[in-house]
Figure 1 (tube, rainbow, N blue to C red):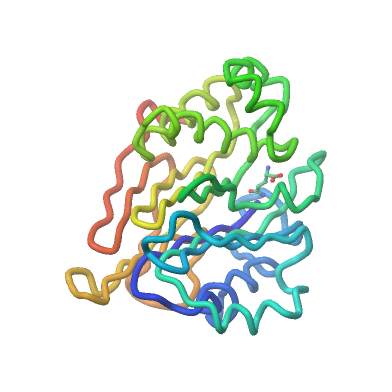
Figure 2 (cartoon, helix red, strand yellow):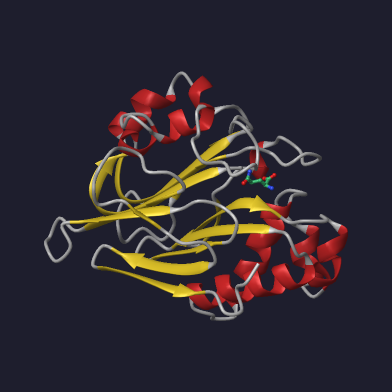
Amino acid sequence: MCRHVAYLGPPIPLADLLFTPPHSLSRQSWAPLDMRGGGTINADGFGIGWFEDPKSEEPIRYRRESPLWSDAGLPALAAAARSGAILAAVRSATVGMPVIESAAAPFTEGRWLFSHNGTIAGWPDSVAGVAGALPVRDLLTLEAPTDSALLWTLVRDRLRAGDPPATALCAVVAQVRAAAPGSRLNLLLTDGETIAATTFGHSLSYLARDTSTVDASVLVASEPLFPHPGWIPVPDHVLLVANPESVTITALEGAAP
Ligand code: GLN
């Protein structure tokens, strides 16, 4: 369904993810290659979160409910804005969920940027119990009435409680897959220093370049953005934790479908 991408490394123009490469996020919004039956195009909004400075307290976020390719002003902005920590996503709304700006990833709080590619099966009844354990205030202020916004609220609840990002993602996947079997839960989370991601029903690849040099970088993306022999497909049902120096992949506990 959605396509998402995260980058950590030396500053690059946002356009290097969004527009310039042959299979840029913009191209993935109208010609994705590996949707695994979850939708056709990703035209229901998009969002970009990026750190202007590595020490910024919060990222800058730009979201729209329209297709990425239809934002006439964005290519120039994306060519000028540079960052060493970026998360961007294009959305294909699940049937029955509203097409509104606030439903587009990245969802954010503090330095956190979050995206979900997939769907919660049986929404909303399947996860009513899981949602009911959240603080009432969080439910009253859910950013959008969508599965992705609920997943972010569940992850955020654990981050606020002090869980490391990988722990928070694994716990939420375990909780939701138990309540809603058949869900697709590719989650992507960064604080500008580390990327944590799960694969659960959708595609993901990564490319680590110039590791152990000052130019070290890592890209994690639903689909490779450009041809390069270093892209590695991530198996399904794993947790990936990456920074420019290292990438680790571990099985999600009890991750059989
Ligand atoms: N269920 C998500 C939504 O409607 C879809 C995200 C995706 O992967 N398409 O926002």
